[in-house]
Length: 173
Image (tube, rainbow, N blue to C red):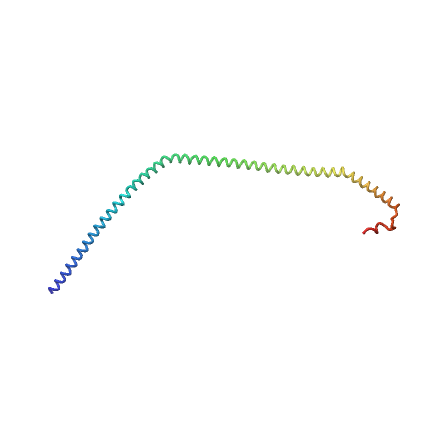
């Protein structure tokens, strides 16, 4: 039994020593890791801190720029608003003037069309009356002259005999 106890104590001592060595290895690894992390943090800090300071300066510059330009921007926005409302008013006035002008032009076009239509109707009436008044006696006179001509032609044609002894009606094809 003593042998078993000795073996058990030796195994336990070896396990404790092994555990101590593992913990010692972990200690040195964590120390190296801590030193590496501290170095990386310092390097990162050396890079980030100037960047943050520049960002603060830039933010301050932008804020000052906004503070100085804000009144100017407000004036510009007000001017643009006034100009756009003035342009809108002028556009509405121009639209009203053009509408009135187009209405008047349309009315004048209708009046001119009626005037031209009445004038053409009167010219047509006048020409038909002139034709009836002036040409009607000439037509009557022409009819009388033609009648006299036919009468004379008939009168003189009876005295002439056809050469072949045939009537002129037979010659008609």
